[in-house]
Length: 276
Image (cartoon, rainbow, N blue to C red; front, side, top):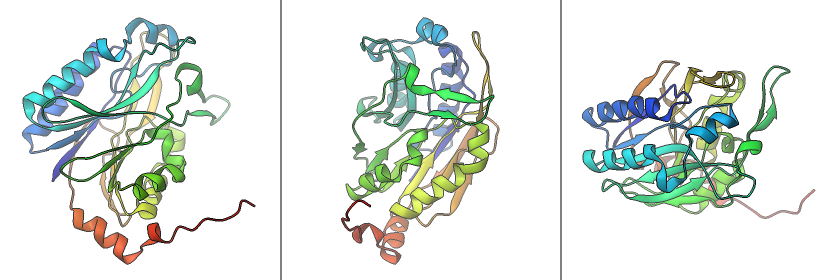
């Protein structure tokens, strides 16, 4: 099965981002991709809560979601919208960071809300408090597709191996990690974490990423690491998208999952143990 990762530099204008995203999706489909993946916060990268409140919508009213569902149906493709920032009815006004799997008829067949919030202080100049603007999800998600069961995750989730082990033990053979990784942690940890999750589970890891400096109408401009990646079930880097916007094709071969798990069947060796 031929797929494609879309690497974006989304700003804080969802309409402008949609033009960029749909153009890349159309090009990827024209290149033969049957499964196309976009990064985290495809619709809006913003550090301004005020700007987010101005431009974000509830899922039912989100124009990016509606347009990309229609495009998936028109092209007859499977589409992972890596995530959209969407409004919720939470009393505290926090948003959801929600990934969507769209089938070739344009239907939403799975939703996943990011579980782990990126609350870190990378340096004195680089601090993130994702939980201030987004509320965490509570449920792990696997979706059945013609190319295998897919476990859906988002970005910072990659640092929590128990989630990926649970997905693999529940049947996932492909893991998606749409991201907007910071440049500092990206350079230090991105590839290592992706390869580790692939090796531990014997899964393909598909990780479309945001890249570059993101235009901002309000607040500071964010920067992200790029380097969209595809990792084989044996831990090999099959695709590294570098730092430019664009499309990166890949091919999935289910026998590679079986081969990796036959060589090192660690998922069958998990044992209970007492806490220290």
